[in-house]
Image (cartoon, rainbow, N blue to C red; front, side, top):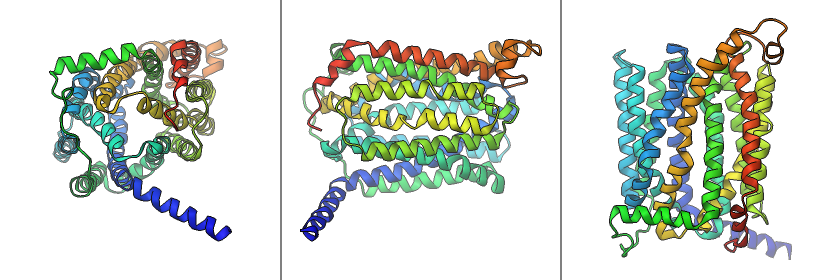
Length: 444
């Protein structure tokens, strides 16, 4: 009996691999390319902050990347629904790689300026605007519905591995061979992903129907109209938009504090980022192994509330990398589980033929707060919280809570962000439309 059961398990695993083979190839190679891109981005954050010493100017790197993504996502999704998904991904990835080549040429000629990076990031953001909805639809087409929960975990698994490996590998490569070598690794990883997508990955394409032949603005209007009608999905998107605002203010302040606070350094920044990666890796494994919960909405709300009520406080009051690492771990351990359930909810409640335009509209609504948050975070650190802390005297309440010196203002900001994040979670937790999504589980 036991032998028969083992044989069945082996057969089931082989069948699972066969059904997920195309996705696993796409996921693994795109993840490798993502690691190379993350290494370059990490190196550029350190380079820009070292050059200017300004949280705002460093934050503008992300603003320039996200601004076109937000502005053009609605139209890009409608176009993505009409275009060949594989060709779209190949063209966008190639254009993004060319911006990296341009940056490498400028770097080798000692001509790289921070405004060059803003411009190149804007082009990258525009390419990602079109590529991302095409990639989402591609995953839906090559993957059976029953694996949606597992895929959410796997995709966050690659993200967590990238978070762990990026600071370690990027710092090591920069130390041994300079930033040019980091960029070269990025281009090599892109080449592997490009060739696999071009010659190996098969993405089914459907014949254009009436919806796909619609005029662009009509298609966009239908995407927006769908979300207006689906108030639960719209509520989740607005919830994540508010969370993204808080998170992007955090992201703008994070390197400024890690690189300038007493006890902070490039090593501390890399250490905390690595621990965050370990946390997301652990959460990704949990998300891949856990069965579909009875209440996906409850998991989403509780995961975000736990993250917001732990990490920011520890970053605010911690004075050593150990406390910052504990905060990073607690803040990110539940995020992959949240994201896996969010991804499943979106796929289950969005018709496949409209996913490109719906995801694109979602991106504009959900991510428009990110460039706003980065700008706000950089401004608040440089012009509000750091000056306030610089005026504190020994014995003051703020001095006692957050210390002194550069970076203490960022710590004060994290304290404020903790309460803002908790408030956002509690507010949207009472949105009745979000809880209406519980009525359908899609058979998972």
